[in-house]
Image (cartoon, rainbow, N blue to C red):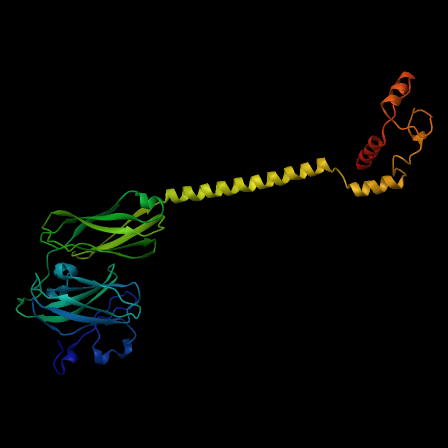
Length: 361
C-alpha cells in the first residue's frame, strides 16, 4: 500500500545507534545527521485491524535481532502495553537491510498507539506513533506495576550423534511467574553461543496470557551444531513486564566417542613408531654380529703384516708343528703334537680371526 501524497512526511524511522536507545525516531527529511544509523520505516501509519503493515530497515549491523510490536498507551510500560502475540522478529542480511510485515490487531491497551522497536536482548528501544482504526482511546495514566519472576535452565542429554560430534538437541525452559495484579503476556527472546558471542537465535513459541500470580514454563528447543564441544552460554530476555527481565544459563556437550577414536589413533601411531625403532635396532645388532668391523680394512691391515695366504705362511709360524717340510696342519699332526706334549697348532683362519678381534678391541 503506497502512502498518499505528502504522507511520507509523517514517516518516522526507528534509529538505534550501537544498541543505545534514542528518545525519538528521526524524520526522513531531518535525518541527515543520522544517515549512517540504523532505521525502521513503516509503509503507512494508519493501521487497520485484520491487515498487516510492511516495514523496511537499513544499515543494521550483522547479528542484530530486531523485534516490532504493536502497543497501546504509548508503550510507556514497555512490552506490558504491547500485543505480544503479533510480535515479529527479524535479522538483517549481509547488506544490513531488513523487511517484513507486522500483523495488525487491536491492542489490549487503549491508544495512543505506537509500534515498539527493540533490539534483542533488550539493549535499546524506540517507538513509531501510529493510528489503529477502531481502537479505543484513553488518556494515558500510570499502569499497575508489571513484574515477572524468571528462572531459566537448559535440559537435554547425550545422543549417539553427540558422542561423535554430530550435534545434539537441547531445550531452553523459562519459568515465568506473574507477580503483578494484571494479566500479562510474557515474550521470550534468547540466543546461545560461546561466552560473550551468543549469536545463535533460539525461536520461542508465541506468547500466551498469564494471569496474576500464575506461573508458566515456556519451552524453546534448539540444537547445538556439529563438532560442538565444551560449555555454551544461553542468554535472553522476557518481555512483557516493566522493565523486561534478563536471564542467563549454560549448557555443555562433550564428544566422548570422537575423543576415544582420536586417542586410539594416537596409541596406534605410537605403537607403529615403537615397532619401527625396534626393528631398526635389531637390524643393526644383526649386522654388527655378522660383520663386527670393517673387514676390508682389517684384511688390509692383516695383509700388511704378512698374513696373505695359508699356503705361503712358513711352517715355523705353526707352534709345535712337525718340522717336515711342507706339512699342513691336520688332525693327525695335532694328535702327534699332543702325544709329544706340545701345544696344538692353530689353523690360519683361526689365527686371522683372533688378530681381527684384537684389533677391534
